[in-house]
Image (cartoon, rainbow, N blue to C red; front, side, top):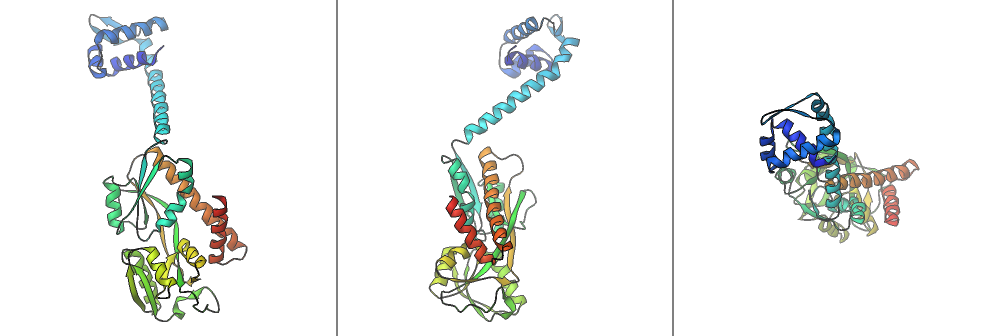
Length: 323
């Protein structure tokens, strides 16, 4: 029994005749008829009543319909899997991020994926705000987008990743407070370097400071996280940075402290409804696994008594040792 014979058989059933089946499959009628005759000979059963040019399923033919559909469905599934395997060997994934989402963190989460699939290129673009990012995902310019939540549209699929925590990063040599975390209410006026694109994050920081009657004096608007960090390191300003960048800042000599309450926002991935291509699906799974490993290592060290910053430093060292 050949797959082609089952395809011919189902085409005749579903299109009510040999002629329509031939048109649908773009083959000659004689080819359809010959294929079904061969199938009947192999099964030693006739599958149709034949009256002139018309064919009508008989009882044996009706018994074959569902098994034939199941067989062809499984073959199509197998082909899809194999096509996915081929796609995983070449190509690219288009990823959008926001200024609020550290591109360094996204790159860190993608490490295991890029090592496993070195021939798949990651094309990462940063967009000005969440609305622009969602538009780019909706119109297909990005397959997936890393964003803080909430988002302004309803017709995207959302995958919650976690909560982004901000830490106060101060110039080298800044006297450490007597205890941590530092209460926001205990801070005085705070000269800040902020990203001029991270609108949502700036609003969250401003609201948290305002709630505790703290004046945030914007000393510099800069386009990137690294520009913020550079201003902190040269003593010009302070900045609230995501924990991964805070770890880097600490290694470069900045003074980093936790605040109470912690300034935080939830984040994750958005993508269009429907199935993603295999490369994008694998990227999501592996990036989330990498993030979970980072979070679990931090929690492990915190449970052992370490501060959030020290726990993040130890997790970072451990993960760099694994890579």
